[in-house]
Length: 96
Image (tube, rainbow, N blue to C red; front, top):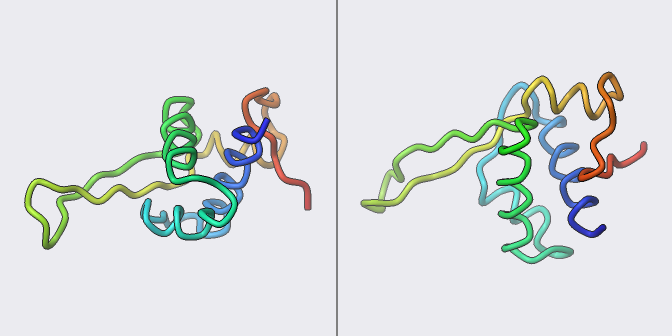
């Protein structure tokens, strides 16, 4: 159940900045007080796999062989948050 809540929080966070995206480090820094980094990255991967968010990767400007990950809310994620599509049992949408 904790992962379901986290996934909903991630979607809500990305909706606040839509149509822009957010880098992975920022998402982790916002949620790390209540969730482990591994849980956050696993939830991000889950949401990408379910096509609720879009992953973009870019070369790191200073570190060779490293990439920066960014995430943006997909229109399906917006529809899920707004109740326009069927609820997903793996995601608990925050109310309010």
